[in-house]
Image (cartoon, rainbow, N blue to C red; front, top):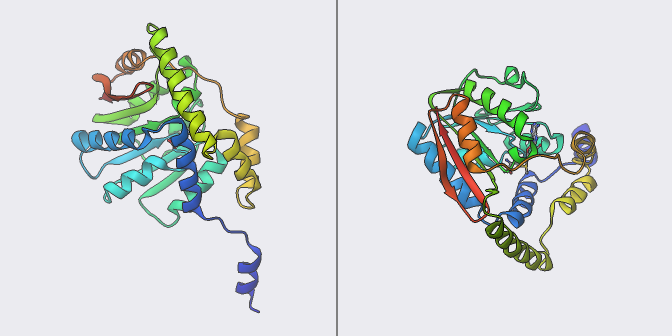
Length: 259
Ligand SMILES: C[S@@+](CC[C@H](N)C(=O)[O-])C[C@H]1O[C@@H](n2cnc3c(N)ncnc32)[C@H](O)[C@@H]1O
């Protein structure tokens, strides 16, 4: 037996593609329209900054947006930034050796997080299902930093749960319908957030980073879900010229701001 055989026999390896797929299924349990949001996001990237953009995948998680970006626009480059060591480990495994991708560990609540980025400016900053982890005040501050790093003519897009508090009966009916659909999918075996993390904690490669992510966040960080109008107004106040939703479902919005 050679040293290489021993290393192969004893070093745990992870199937990164399987983790990507299982993450996608878990997220789709909450958002059946998830892929549709990404498709429209990339349509608008192409429309506004072309098919070879330099992108910042903000709160990238496993690099979901980056993977779809590169599949559709092979000339694009992407910087993924996140704080979760386990999701970043999956991203690192997935994009290992791909020179178009760089991954950065940073807390988006840290006022100096942009200093860790490999570039001073981006054609597009894209984010999904993440900024509701921040309260409104740090989110407004984050939008100020985003406005600084998007080039003139560049775009920011945020796909997330944005709640219009002026429509409480519509919101309650939509939520009840969505949860009934989720309960039915759960009965069919869908994994939820905490079950997915229990699986990650049992994986020999992800167990360590998963324990660290629970030290950082607990189960989930607490944040706000302001309305699309709030996001558009704050983005304009922070330096974007135009901002409005470009897609919405009964529960989610894709908001685009143009510098
Ligand atoms: C539900 S995941 C979404 C990930 C990915 N965008 C997707 O759509 O699959 C939310 C992500 O936001 C990240 N996040 C939340 N708060 C953060 C912060 N303060 N700094 C950096 N990342 C943060 C989490 O670590 C997590 O990866």
